[in-house]
Length: 313
Image (cartoon, rainbow, N blue to C red; front, side, top):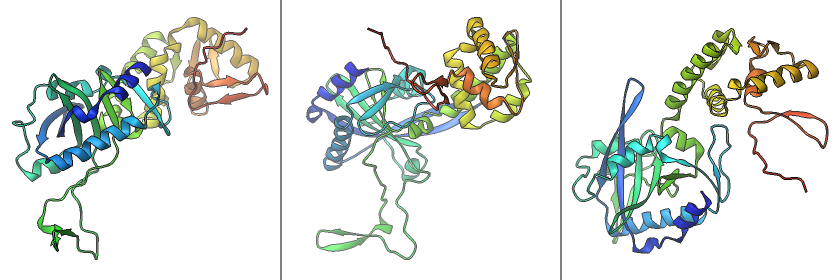
């Protein structure tokens, strides 16, 4: 991950060409489908987009792996994940086949239907890197109440109501490079690539596994509580990815420690009974996020945890 970030930072973007593309989306049976078209831009705008791209890359210096429960990256940190595990692989498959000079937007209404846009950097061999930005509900510049939008051009004001004016952000949500996504905004990344739908699918698979393994009783309490709630969906996605619920040794230790520390779980022979009162504890423990401090001899429930590769001297 760090090596790829360093490779990206070493690229001479001044020699690359820049294009702008917009993405429209529709859903069928909870599956997202995407349509991409380029938008013609002039050279001054291309230069500004290039500087936005370069600025986001230059500020990124540290990289950690993306997880469902990780916090927003701060300062110079980015999160990373393989693009094939997201909807972005669908977008890249289509983007590689498009011609920036021919596959273009022709009407303003197509822009208004867009969900996101891409800043595409190319060399003579093809696409080098792509910047992704999720759009607000309506990205066309709106007239503020009580104000008239005007632009000074040449030696006079022009009324912007007579122009099709759109706004481009100075930020990107993530960058694609060499099959890796470098995530700058976790919230917008998840929104832009429909992670809620993916987490719903993971939750359904997890419910089936719980039923097959018989490790949880009263599963309906969990299903009802989770529903479409993204906070719970992220917990379930993390539980599924970690897979501790499939480990008999983990469940045996959980049962022993639960009894020793009087955590209050109703558990016997590796089977946990869900109750309204213990559901939150069960989700914390199946994520292995109840941790003990050797410094203060206290136990803590944590939102996220980073495994240390510590080898005692």
